[in-house]
Length: 213
Image (cartoon, rainbow, N blue to C red; front, side, top):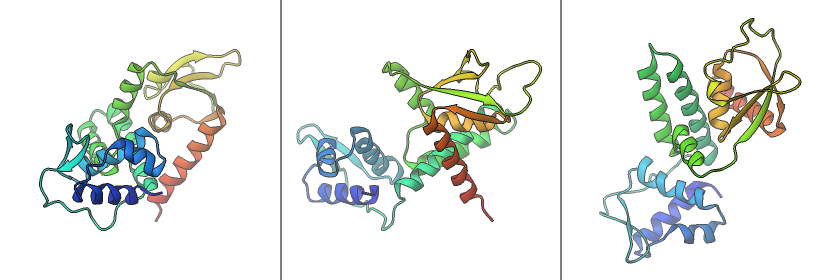
């Protein structure tokens, strides 16, 4: 079910004084806790709802009634696309000093519109939680530079080479790693895992879609 329906449900319950909470959303829509929290954050941070948690009632409420949910919201696919673009500009900002400020501001704007968390913040929170990162095996499909250096955008993910001289990378979020891969300026083949290769193709399809003439 699209997030629009969940946002409308949440708004309706709040206006009726029923103090909805994350656990109720999980049970009602059969979604993860992370997704339920994303919906709450989207309502508060992206739509500007005067949202407040009431410990006594163990649920959410509005601090005033002037707020109204827009008639049409973005779908989850559209939110994900904006999040991908935000991550892409985050990577570009970190490697283009002259345009860093402009690119960072653009990344923040896209991130706010998407209602998602910054990829950098996601990485830090996942690292602190002690979660095991994904591993990617990449193979050059063009002549490797004589220096054999790793592109600056990929250096935070680089973990070495395997016995076939293929490059090994680790990451927590594919939507942080893929923009870094594209920003490298080199041509790679994703040897492993297969799902990452499919994500890359989907990412490029979306970039093509939003930039089509």
